[in-house]
Amino acid sequence: MRKDARVEAMSSSRNQALAAGVAFVVLAAAPQLAGDGQGGTTGGADAKGAKGTLTVELEGGQGDDGSPYRLPVDGPGPAPTETAEATLRDASGRHTGEVAPVDDCGNAVARTAFDRGETPWCLELRSIDAGHELTGTVAADGNELALTVRRRDGFWGPPLGVLVGGLLAGLAAATVPPWLRGRVRPLVLERLLDANEAADAAEQVTGLREWAEDRVAEGDDQDAVIEKVDWVVEHGPALARRVRSRLDRELAPMAPEDQHPLVSASRAQAATPTHEVGDFYDEDARVPHPAQQLAEALPRLTAIRAELDGQERALDGIAPSPEKTTAGKRLGATQAKLDGVATPAELEGMGSHLDALKDAMHEARAAAERRRIGPVSAGLEAADSVPWAPRGAVLSGIVTPTTVAGRRGQAIVMTVLVALVALAFASVTLYHAGYHAKPLFHSWGDYLELFSAAAAAGAAGTLLTLIGYWRPGSSADAA
Image (cartoon, rainbow, N blue to C red; front, side, top):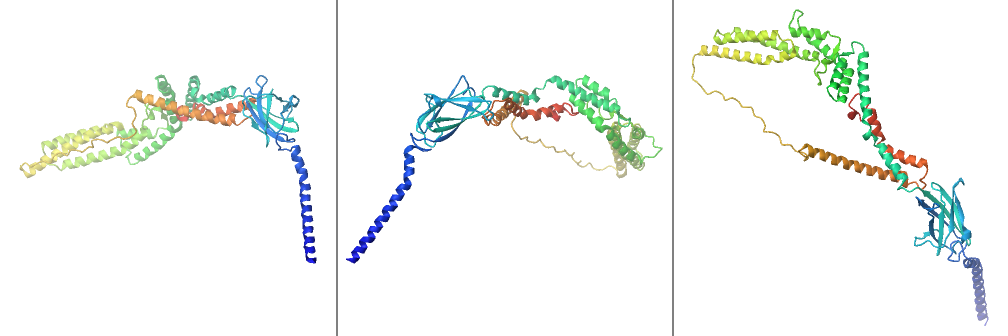
């Protein structure tokens, strides 16, 4: 009996403790359950105190006085009434807009601004100043919606015009008025000619102005004339001094009493301190400097003299014959021709005379040999060797049009395609960088930045082209 009483007492104590624990849990949860019944920040249709945020980006006429923008939102409670109309303003307070509840937003897709939204709200945005970020709050039955509204100008209007204008400005290098180039390039030529005439006598090239003016008057390309004049002014005198120094070295072995016309001309050229345009250019092409031609001719003169002396000694050792007499006359004529040579060009013409002399000497030796050994049986003569020449080489490469018209058409098509691709790439890049990334695009600064970015696409080429007009080299190479 005592044991049963003790078991019953212990069971009663456990039940009392469990009941106390359940009561504590119920009491602790009671405030929360009560709150759920009244509505919380994320409650259902009857919730109160919910706070939502929403950012709206408008473009073009959306949200202005003539075209209000209707904004559907899934709200957490009853929709705002007319008394919930609010003013939106920017941080400075100088730019404002209005937001007001309306009855119907049509079929527009509702925005999600609250964690739980089951009641359709319809708000109308109007009088929104473009180019500014406006903020404000719409309240309804204890729920609040914080709005941020941004409006920018529509792209298919002034922004597009500014972008195209910037691209055209950037491509101005291709459309620079011809009169600008026609006025700049003569100034460059005049500057070079003036610099030449102002130089010391040792650095001045006489006749350069007349030569340049004649070339331009006869229709030569002005850029080509400028390039040649610039080369003469910058490098001509220094080149002349170098080749005259070389000519001095070639004259050193010549005897002082040597009065050969070519030697005398070389001495005169080596001692000349001045320069003439004809030393560098004929009518339109570069020519070797006279000192350079003479320096290359003197060793040739010495070699021909030695060759004639050797032929004369060889002729003395050949037995008398009509062929020897002919060879002697040929030797005398060749020597006389050499003594009259006055220019490097005439010296080059000595080759045919030397060949004729060699043939005459060969006949004289052959005649002397025939007389020495008597008649012999005729034998087979060696066949003349026929020099071998290749038939030609097979050209390989990319197939191109064979006519001038075909090549011109191909060049035009490729140029247009490359230009279109470049312009398309630049336009898309500028749209994204200068317009799309700016939800408040409206101010003059925004337009100026878009224009500047577009112009910068071709500014480098424009600058190089304009500067190139002032360079002595051809403007095409300068650009």
